[in-house]
Image (tube, rainbow, N blue to C red; front, side):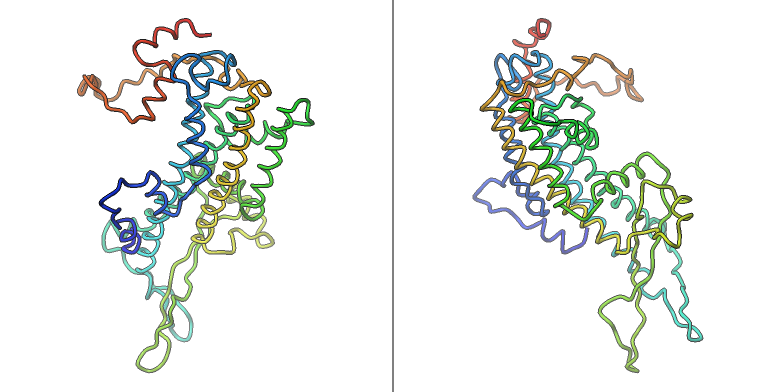
Length: 381
């Protein structure tokens, strides 16, 4: 991490007070005020006694599903903020790795016989040879974290808007599809769902330039599921300009990368369209990544405000929108992969006492997981 960023993150909290819960996120520039309120509001509706889960959902969608859906809803809510924190940390590390690697090429551009030439420096160590990989890992980390935040946002949308689709494996495209199937206003509850669907689409448009959301998800899918696309970059003059003793400017270069314009397409497909179709975005990759972080944050905050309104309306009108059983269609899972590790039994986990955060304790009680309540699971519908 760059010294300037380390210094900011190392600024001590006041000694006479507890650190603020969102202090670290604020230091990263990730203040999510409305999202924090939504998280708090969902947790506040957990019932630690019967009917368990989100109490005002009862009797639907059955006790076991009410517990499973409610807990997953809260997990998705907290994971949105967690993923945005990871994106912010990857961003800082990306800046450091980019500056460090680019500095090696400061003298790479030379003028010989009146023509510019490239004289790339020799890698002096494995660390220097891995310079581009440090950039890639944090670039990929930013996109992965943003896309994960969007998929977790989708889980919260499914839960809060009572959409009839699975919440455990939620993704943003599926949530939008479910919302876009809502037509008309067959009831006041359906009307509220339709109103939220329209607001979400407006929030997406307002958060960034045309196509930013689909590009982010396509790039994540390329990074995670497909072969990596070719990378393109260039050398540009490094600022500020420096002048030698003869008064002539000294050539100093800076490396910049460009991200693909269509990450959902293959290299061959886009090369076939060249030169009439640009292969890459006509801006520095650093600017693209920062824009995606800002757009995702903006979408999360504006959507959180709308979700808060919908959650409050549902709480005040609990019979208007029932929590669908389709959100957990097969009930409680008991499947296991059968994986027991690489050296099973070498370090047992059998604590005599466990210390948990108060939020985790509330989740466990709301899920009837404490010893006195656990036997009730055999009777839950």
